[in-house]
Image 1 (cartoon, helix red, strand yellow):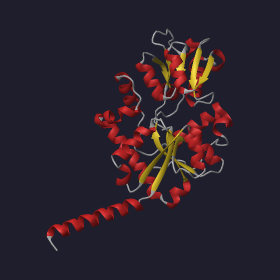
Image 2: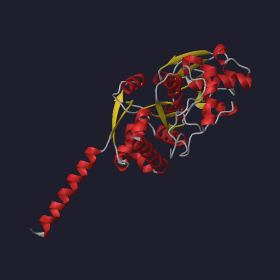
Image 3: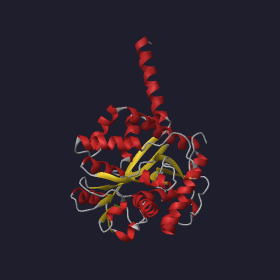
Image 4: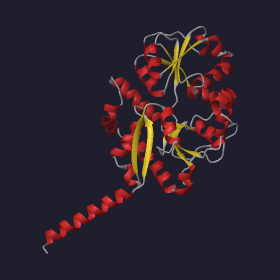
Length: 324
């Protein structure tokens, strides 16, 4: 047998082995909003093969809304979704064994028109505030508590609230039809790029209320049985996420590659979205559970059972901590 035939045979064997290894890699099915910002990170994981390098295959399923993702997850059609840990706490308190890997601590702000004369939340009395997310939106609740503490203002009673989908709040705010607006962070970034300005950020309000602004709010949610039965897979997902974050934190070229799927219509929007995502990257260390418990207590006080269910205290085992 010639040397070239041996070489070709060896190469074929390696390709076969690689294919077999890939076929045997566990698949992790993620159900996420079809146009949500988490897709940027998942795209980076897939494009750079951070899933394969960590020993699994990520399969992304786009869904129309958060409720659809939760139905798919709880019905066994998806292994991971993105939600906030307060929802996980509520589910654990109700007896469901879900766990949380931090994804983002990005929150928002109450934005006002660029020519607004408002200096504090008290100056919004009698005006319309647009809110994406409904009456139990966490940013809205925190800002209400802050307004009461700092200015003695009942923001809900002394303003008119307009609840709507994020794109609607975005559009009406830019058209000058609202005195202020609370929206998801990526819409806020675009609003600022469009000439609006933050009156008060949720971080500022949270800090004034004694909360730790480093506590990540959003994360990947998986089932506890997966953590028990296949902890390597759960930690592989956490590591792939961290690999993607580390790349996005330092590499502008990766953002240029992502730009077509970011729906940034101007350079200013693109720069604002990039900066907002980077600002929301949580620390790589463990979540401070005492700080999380304090946040949960405040949310329970502000939103009651409609928001947190029976989770009055932080249930054990919510967070998948590094090295655990």
